[in-house]
Image (cartoon, rainbow, N blue to C red; front, top):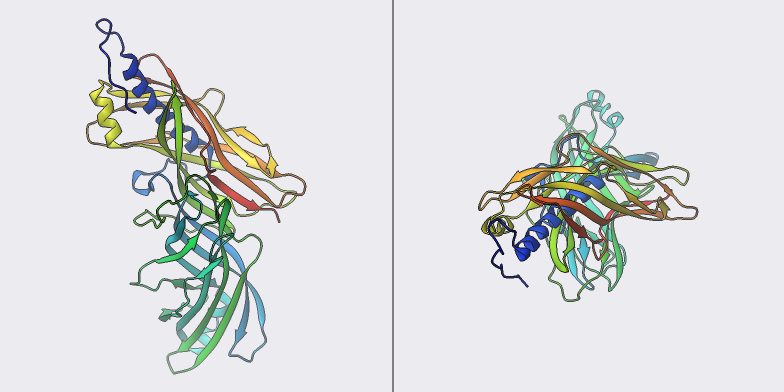
Length: 425
């Protein structure tokens, strides 16, 4: 419930309930800042406004190691070939019990090695036709537990071949829309892990004089195949989560790594009042698995805070013109690994730069302004099957118009928002 402002007791004296609303925004800014410093890894700069998904949205790109059984011309010896599948898409960061959801804006590709195209000059091969009849994305504990986005076989004609260069077969074909994979129905509790299940492709290498060499590839994951994990909780009866229009501007990851941005919803408390906040976290170079004796770290962290224009206008109406402060705590919680809890904010804190409010304009605050942050290393505990790192609580000290600092506290998101869920291999 929105508090009504009171008259100041004297000229220049702050308004108590106005301070409450100002602290609420401080809270929002602090929470977002904390989280963005905490997690994964984009480049050395902060997330750009054009790349930010909405609050509650996870965008990502994953390059998963797979193993394909290769058959030439239906008769030549079968080969076992390690390849990669490159998948990107958009999903919610949390699910309600029994909620319907999709992996939207999906696309993918399988890359065949350059030695296949090395035959091109000898056989006069210059093009390839491909038909993909299976590209299945699983969702554990959901109904169904997998969806084949190529259930109606997809044909791609005349893919150019360059001798000695890898051959990439991608979906969707040029000019086609990205895929919406689903619907899935979430379980009543627990969590859902989206992952690559299988792929089957037929590729015909063609020469200009009519020769054709058919190749089939029957592919399964090797090592970890998880794309992302989504916790289930909260109220039942939530509307279907079919997200459209999210930005997907990611470069191609290395094999066995992911890149992505997650914008997690937070509930922040100040003076007994609860306010919503969004924390955007960017990541690249994060491994998809961890060995029993190994570890992984977030070594190049950055993020961004978005304050919507509606909040900006309310603050201006209360006489606020600038916000500044310092993030003092942002905790990562770890299941199946050590440390179990980690404050990723340096002891000196992270400054929130002075930011001026402009009516009808949202604020995007890059975090940090310069350089990067690190977190880790995270090591598996004995017997753990996975190491799960999630967003914990956050605290900031913030001020308005250069006034006295106000403490804002944001609790761990509920249900949990997972940053990574790395299988132990």
